[in-house]
Length: 280
Length: 120
Ligand code: SF4
Ligand code: SF4
Image 1 (cartoon, protein in one colour):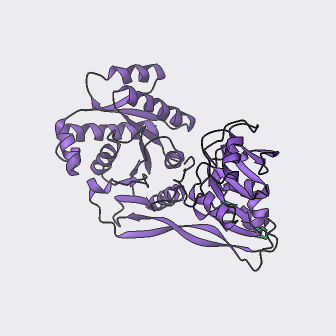
Image 2 (spheres, protein in one colour; image 1 turned 90 degrees about the vertical axis):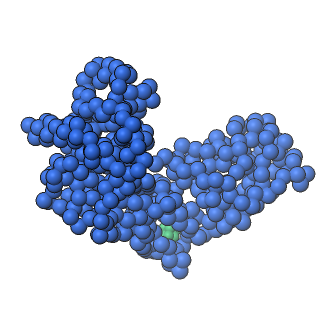
Image 3 (tube, rainbow over the protein chains, first blue to last red; image 1 turned 180 degrees about the vertical axis):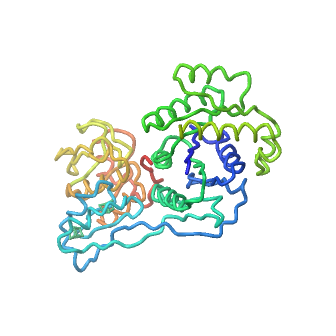
């Protein structure tokens, strides 16, 4: 399965429309919404999400009868998820990173791990669409992204999968990128776009993932991006010209490829060139 | 009585730090402003849960009273479970805050302020 990550520095660069468009025109290609804090790909692809699963993590629970208040668990926790107050342990489940260290060091075995749901993943049984959703107020969506990717990997009939990453270069983006064969970085020809592009390029370089740039709202300002890409030897693999139609479609939740033949052709070409680059 | 105050410096004449979890130091004094101890706030650089770790440090210092700017919900939970009264600091030096406290001029913090999420 060819795994393509689509990322961008900030929100609103057209990352979702481009990744959803790409996935929808390639036969046997899944769209995977890794932006678990604000999944929105479903708005464009209208999937039938008939499969669903809670994502559970293990957090400590303290048996107060067994706990002797020694504080070993509090001292070992790297994430400040525990506190010892007047001989009693307080647990802050949202801060727990599920490392299991506290239960290991507890001599009287007062700590058990209990399941806690932090969100869910859902997908269509035809394997075209996958998404994860983090419950509101939860700080870290990485377990959801991991579970999402695991589920996608199980679908061995898929030819390809497009991973729509969350904006920025956070831990969740790193996790979404992990194991991908190629990264498409969507940007806009503005100074902000360039700034964010640089961060994204550094990230994919560090992770040794081949990458290309997609300039959205391409036009007479492209030079700002082109100069950088030339200097850094990063190919510009696609330019999507600004069009009022795309903007209007976006507002109505319609994918631009649905009636933009030129875009459909260039996305197909992009896909084949990625396939060529990765598999050669 | 041992009073803990979030502080920007190590001296009694340094300014109070309105941050709790990310304060530079905690200064411990008695009610007359006599310096007892200074704690470096190890939680300052924590990626998450700074408020909890700072609250734990205040607890472990044996403080009877806390004076600070604002407490996040997690820090509030620790401080109130320990029944340590927390008072709202006013802009100014540590000494001025101790004096204001001794004169009964500081109000109690009863509600937590906004949570400060760490790095994601
Ligand atoms: S499992 Fe790890 S992160 Fe969670 S409370 Fe225990 S030690 Fe802390
Ligand atoms: S390590 Fe175990 S016994 Fe010690 S404080 Fe933690 S829960 Fe209690």
